[in-house]
Image (cartoon, rainbow, N blue to C red; front, side, top):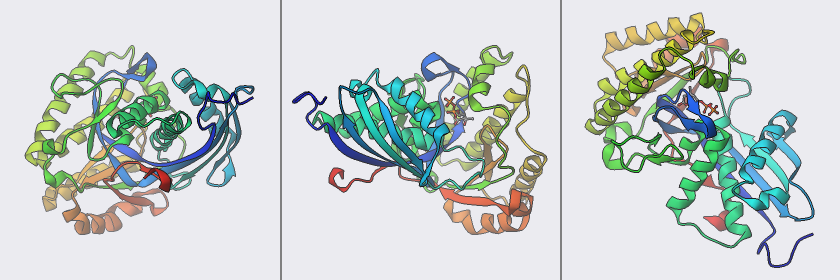
Length: 360
Ligand code: DP6
């Protein structure tokens, strides 16, 4: 039954679009409640996005129920279950969720089975939807900073890296005394005066080395960091790299930034290989491409660097002004090494968008 007055607006609709992000300093290893072992830094992408629409009725006589869930127009029971578990988790913070009757539809621009994780985009979009529901149901209005910080906190509970998808520009998640305002609980934008303009139009070409589902998930990888022999060194390395990269970003130093992001990517994979049990997510063509990228850089002196997530695919990072040369190189030298010649062009984006006109 809907108790009159308890919920000012017990029925409604929310709709958010939110991007994936690419980490330059990697989050690897966590404590309970998705608190990171070390601070990380990333930027959001422009084209790799998920939009989620939630139509809801809050009825105290009924338990939480996802009445239907569609991903790109199709049922997806596996993902629906993940979302249900996540909403149960969020109901500790938003009691109305305990009685929410929901129709959820989700659209993703991630190419089907490209082997690129969409969880950061999906959980950040969902966190935004729940925070918007809270505002509408109780007719309250957070100021924008508080709203996005809260959404970042909630997104973190779904997937750690998702908390970095809420802001444009460079984003830091994890406390460090060197950057005021940073927190383990939510991400913050690195203020624009700390980022040289040459880093404001970063490109990310994603080279698909393999789209197979990886053998070891990121969650299992984080878990292996608990007893990792290099755990303490990794914490120090990440802090040191974060310190150095923040200086390089401010100074407009692409060379130093690039060297740090490649060091982070290779260290991440080194940590996986030296875990117990150790595992390898790079494929032979990943390594061939990494070598080609380094030779191309040496020959051309262009600012083109790579990073890798916990998978075999490569993110090629470079400034907009080098786009033409890098894309020619991708087409001629790297595409033949990609699965089905597949790569995706993306670039730094502007963060989430509220797709409901009346909220803009
Ligand atoms: C290698 O955020 O996917 O991409 O918190 O368990 O959901 P969970 O892990 P997830 O880990 C991402 C790890 C990474 C590095 C990064 O994005 O910082």
